[in-house]
Image (cartoon, rainbow, N blue to C red; front, top):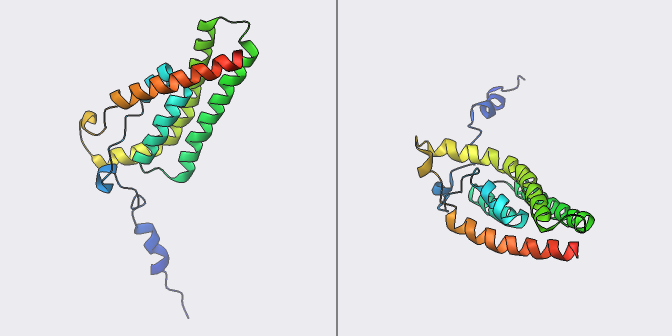
Length: 163
């Protein structure tokens, strides 16, 4: 008896983006622009950008593995800030500590950006708007709140580690 090959080929003809819809189609809020999150990383530090990136991954309907990668990048960045402050806190002044933690936060954001990039492309594909400004939610208010709260928390942690 000959095997039916039409069932094997049917998987090739199904769309690969079938389970990934834009946030608007799910009834949720629109995501934030990935490029705008770098300002949160610079001004608010690794805690602030981890919170914003994780919430944005939820808005983008990113899978669990990507959300865990964002949290892991944030935890690694926070650990690197603590180690930097503990090792070099006595040798550099306050501005050197701020510069070092900002650099570490930007590097950690790089990993978070990569984790969000593919779901963001899927979202952008489904929106299909010519103007990018209509596709994304404004990050001003949540970014400022995250930068203030996360920046203060990171400053307290770094000051305690530099102690």
